[in-house]
Length: 136
Picture 1 (tube, one colour):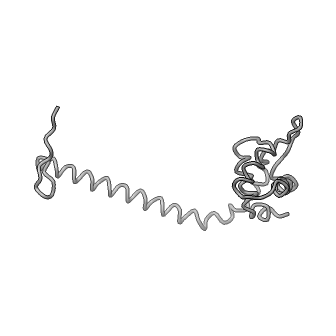
Picture 2 (cartoon, one colour; picture 1 turned 30 degrees about the vertical axis):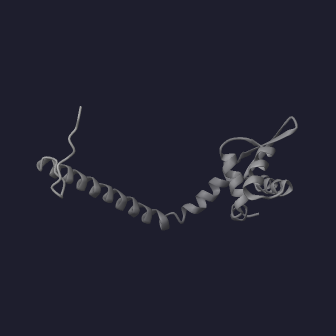
Picture 3 (spheres, one colour; picture 1 turned 90 degrees about the horizontal axis):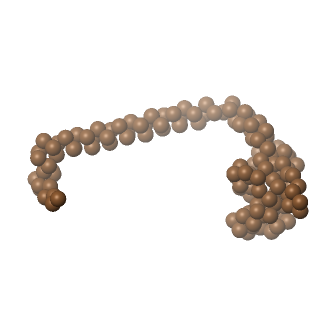
């Protein structure tokens, strides 16, 4: 099965997210997935098998339990392949970051100017209202 066929299934992506947090038993994975997706235990087991057979997850026995973990190698291969296309979203994201920074700077400058204006006016607001007296 191709990597994107494996990752194209929301249940399998969620299982990988769970496993990314650390080793989990099949029972733990099953409980979360059944609750979130409303699917049967055999269906969860099938998804775990696909992840294992495709190399995205590894399993080891511990007594009567089966413990699953993420195998990062197939994910690295996906990331390497996606790297060829990163330029299509990297530049727009860089531009977005620049605009966000510019907006924050403009807001800060406007706030600083308003504060300086209030200090010059003795604390009066735009309507000529004096600040409330402080008790202390």
